[in-house]
Image 1 (cartoon, rainbow, N blue to C red):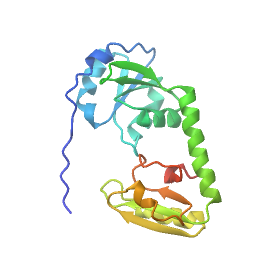
Image 2: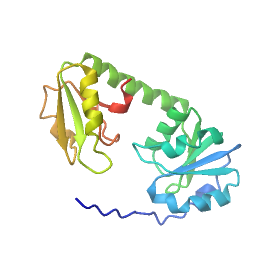
Image 3: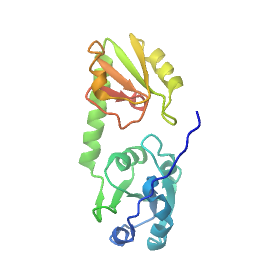
Amino acid sequence: MKTLFIPAYSKINISKVIKKVKIHGKIGLITTIQFLPQLKQAKQLLKNSVIGGQITGCNINNALKIKNKVNSFLYIGSGIFHPIEIAIETKKKVYIANPITNEVSQITKEQIEKYEKQRKGSYLKLLSAEKIGIIISTKPGQYNLKNALKIKNKVKKPSYLFISNTINLQELENFPQIDCWINTSCPRIEGKNIINYKEIP
C-alpha cells in the first residue's frame, strides 16, 4: 500500500522561548517534526549548541548519537513524554523549551523516579500474569511482528497476538482473561496493565 507522508510544521516562532534559555555547557538540540525546520534558528541563538534533530516516541537515536558531545539536552516542544525518555537513556540533564507557553523547564529527578516506578510496576504485573496479550499495530513505522514473536517466545507463558491498525484501549477491556498486555506499537499507548516491549529486560 502506498503511503503519502505530509509533515505538519508548526507556525509558532520558537525564538521568543529560546531567548529565555540559560544553560551552561554544550547543549544538544532535539525536537519533534513540528519544530524541526526551526532547529537551525535555535542553533544561531544558542551558540554553544549541537543539532541532534528529530526524535519520535519510539526512536530517540538522534539524541543518543550526540550524547557524548553535549553536557545537556534542550527539547523544543511541549509535554514530557519525549524528554523524560532522553533523560533516562542518556543520564544527562534535559530541559524543555515550550514554544506554546513560552516557558523553559527541566526534567526533575522526581519525575524520572515516578516514571521508572511506573515501569517497574508494569513489569511486576507481567511477571505475575497468567495470560498475556501482545499488541501489534499494522501502521507503517509501528509494525513490529518480529519483535512480538521474540517476546512471545521469551515470556514463556500463555500469550496471544492481537493485530490491528488502530489500538483502542476500551476494546482491550473485551478480553478480561488477559492479565497483562505487552505493547509493540506506539509507546504512547499506556495503561495500568500495559508494558512496552522495550521495557522488558
